Image (cartoon, rainbow, N blue to C red):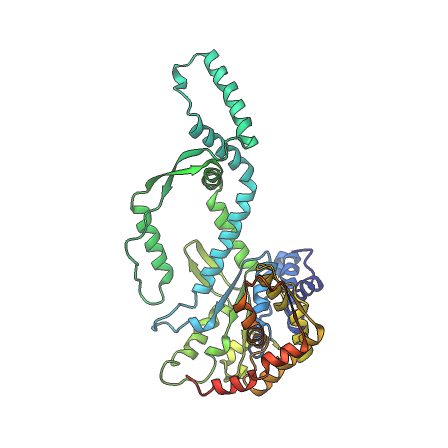
Length: 443
């Protein structure tokens, strides 16, 4: 985290997200402040609260993409949740505290993976010994004399050397592994008690006897099974849970997407619990103790990043207390034609590169002329202006319509190269605008 400066975070996000400089900057500063807080004197550290962020912008401008890239970039526990899934206590749906429980689950998994890497070499050595036992079972060592034991050890050393050299990789062995019994029923808990439901399921699985399962596997497949089992034995789960809870409290990040869906005044009908959800989320964002199956977690220093399109509602429709808990507001810009050109060509996962790779699998070289790319961007911008502005997602509509016939006709022995130029784009997409208008009246 020390090496991940705000400028480096922005540079990493620039590889996948075009524009939105202010949003990237705000997120980068908030993330760096997590590390800065850890360097502060302990007496002041607990007084420094994270500045939560709310990203405001229409659909398709990069809000969710920022969260996806942060998840891969950060080495801190990170979870993305949809605010629209939560309901007020008393209604069918997810309890808001489940977002914190999800964060702890992610942290436990991350720490466990790190611990597995530490013990991997030892686990591999133990797994090889178990493979030798399966391939060449040892006799009754208690009845052997000293010379026989030495001979057996020399033989085993030679076999071990051959095993490491890969001589037995395709040999079939019988692997005995312990399998947890499949649950016979879904445990239904009271509303809002999904964590207790999980605990009941864990308890039932512990009561039911473990099943020893015999499988016939190749040595290379059996090695993976044994390495996993040996690593499990070497990892101290109490230590894993302790580290995971600490990381979640000090460095945890929760990305709360679609927060605009719970904004708005009270109304009767299916939206009756929207303000109730906000009231339930408020104490978690403010800081409270949440019970998880691994122990209690304090959310005082968890960073919350919220995002919403706010087409129907406004940020001011959120209850004032919740607004106050998101002091940093970032308005994201709508995408222009020049942004679309960059989206098509610049990112590592650019849409044009994806289609080139897809057609390459059929042995066809796909090439886009510069004027064709400009025309695609112009048409996407025009469609967004005429109809609903769905941002960069419009490019998927345009590209699919443009290449639909080509993708349908392939593979074709006579087609080895396809060049997409301005003329082809205009011909293929001439009626797209009219078709989009017509779709409004077709169910």
